[in-house]
Amino acid sequence: MPLFFALCEVRSPYFIRQSLEFEWSIHQGYAMPRRLTLRQVEAFKAVIENGSISSAAQMVHISQPAMSKLIAHFEEDTGLKLFDRLKGRLAPTECAMRFYREIDRIFAGVRQIENAAEAIRREERGRLVVGVMPALSGSFIQRATTDFLKDRRNVFCSVQSLSSLWIVDRLVARKLDIGLVTARIDNPYVIFEPLMEHPLVCIMPLDHPLAAKSQIEPQDLDQIPFVNFNPDSYAGHRVEEMFEAQGVKAQIVLIANVAPTLCEFVAAGLGVSLVHPLEVIGLEHRLVVRRFEPNILANFQLCRSVDSRNAQLVEAFAQELRATAAQISRSMLNDS
Image (cartoon, rainbow, N blue to C red; front, top):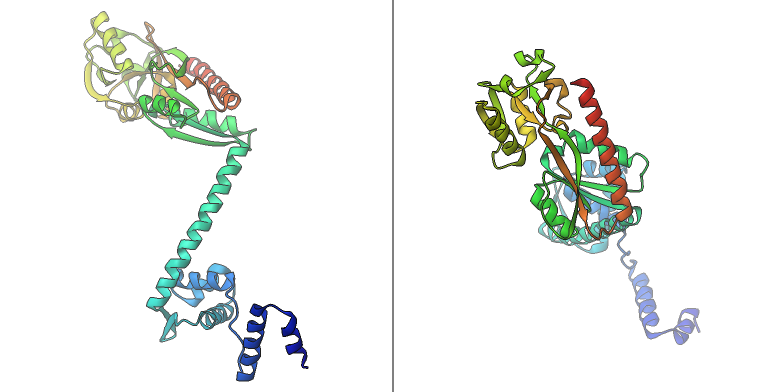
């Protein structure tokens, strides 16, 4: 008995059927179709997305002849007409585009798996999500966060600029780990800590006449163009109270709701203003900063959830914020 039929006697029906089909195909003069390979699929996807064999070959780092061979085998193995050849260029057929959409859906699933794996790796390394009000979302938070991450390469940090109310809401919802806000917002689920209580300083354009003085007093601002915060804000309200108490009639030329905007208008020459020193960080070379008497004390609030999920990491970041704020405070006092 031929060896092939002897094997058939001891193999499963599926094996017998496959073996008979293979033997029959040999007698008919052709082999069964090859299985599709991932390399073929990647080549097909690259041609669709890049529009030509040459561009696709560059994308996947193979030669143009190798890419052409992969595409030819892919069409042969799928049994589908995927491209029309028009003047030496490949034009995808409707069948090819249907096939591509299915392949793209599968690759999107693979990307989701990769993203999930990266998220898990980040969670294992340590993850800190910081909310910061716009006034401190520039140089201050950049300095503090950069110093914090220097010796913590295993920590993934996300910084989000939000209003104070949104920061507190997201702390309660556990979408943030720590926040910097402009004023204390009563909430039993959030711990608040004053950060860098400091007298407001007077800022002015570089060529302003008041720059000749080492200290600015209320009467210096009488009838002087002044840029102020919104009256319903903490800082704006305190400044207006000071003007009224001192009998000063400042010439309010503009009202701004966030410090970066206010500082930009002052630097552009529109007027002078009173701000917290932290709000000037990064603009020192464009503004003159002077002490202001009498003191108008102001601070920011460092806040965190009562039951923080990353207590140790949050406290370490809080310490870095305090250190950076203190360093800036000393620098401002020495320079002004």
